[in-house]
Length: 327
Image 1: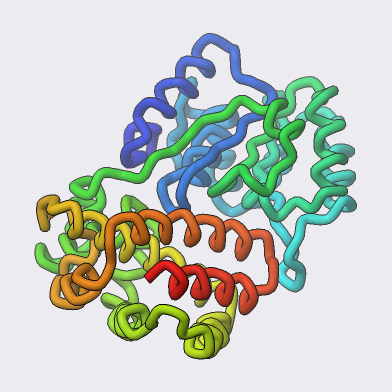
Image 2 (image 1 turned 180 degrees about the vertical axis):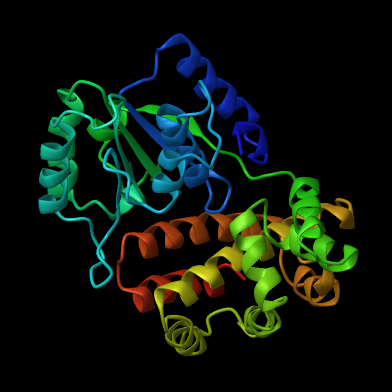
């Protein structure tokens, strides 16, 4: 294993490898970008490169330190997440982390904390972390990982060096899926639908192309202007779980992107929902470019609100109300 095996993100990897080689790593980073594009993988790779016994400024993936980081039991590398029964990372977790970072490293290398997703930090825990970032313990490294920065305090973001992670190329995702046994047609369809996310592609590959998409497309096609009652019923059905809501919003973004492309007369090869061209053409005939572009902004806002654990049904109601208003 090495940095060379990470798919895409070459600019980000080059920046980190240069900082490693020159001994100029920042004390805190903010890895920003869509889910499933390699942020967590890169953060873990950086931790391994700092602790690997076999390689310099890189990692082998097989030595004791690399394996312990993978198993999440390395004494100098902590992953901070919301507890399974909670929605937020608490101030107590951050205070405990601050104490641990001030202890001497067991290996003589940096003490490292990966906070994922950083948007799970509540305001109190963000303020507690801010104090640590303002006076970082010697030989510490904190990496915040987030899909969006909207839920993070500006003062917190300003103390971190930001690295933005872009969606992977469709061809990169297709090759990755084919290397893991997907057929050519399946790999092409999933790669398009994944929107550059390996995580999304793997989920689709395991589950098959979701039948929910056709149901959701029919629902959006049937939403008529001013039909708030139907929008309320659909919002309630979509709000079953946080994962369900996020899956719908991720797909809806791809759908309205495709509608915009169809209305602008772009190549069909640019479509994400390649296998649903008939449904796309049906709604494209009913949707102008401006409402489609506006819908993308509304969907992005809804996804941020769901990520921040606001009431899912109310978030989805607001989104669908806006969609029926702008039909």
